Length: 198
Image (cartoon, rainbow, N blue to C red; front, side):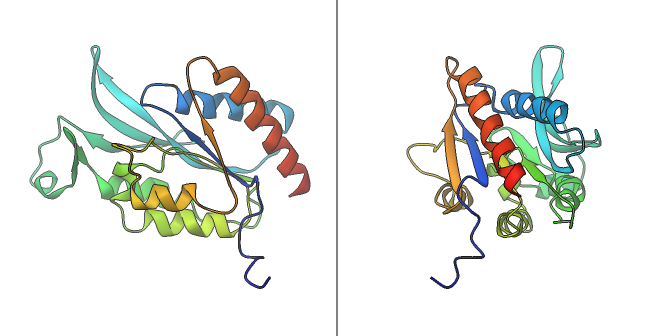
């Protein structure tokens, strides 16, 4: 059974998925709040993604670290000379340099890390060639991970997402409007459990 020890233990990688707008980020933030209340000394690293709105319209996304630093991820309104070369997802231009400057340092595995939050491992983020290798390093570190992934489009996963989904340590939770509270409790219990073993 060689090669086993570098695989994450089962239950160490919790993946939240579901259709856009179902509340993946909200769920992760609620789990985070509960964990901080019950385990105030946890060292948690990572980032989450949130919409940027102007009036009632979504004009982009930003990444936010758990200690509140922010950087643009994607925008419909940016038009600088550089932005013409940026990858596009739908109507959004993805600012990889901005994303990487914030997200990659957060994914560096530190000795005392207890938990990683990665919201989300999606199409925009995966345009960064450094992002997925950093995610895999986190998984190999055996530190528990709570991450979100998009649901397959037209029945097909993006390659990076497929690799996460098929990771031996991964447990997948599919969110729907009527199971959100139950899933939140489940994830919270499972994390508390693996944090005690960690």
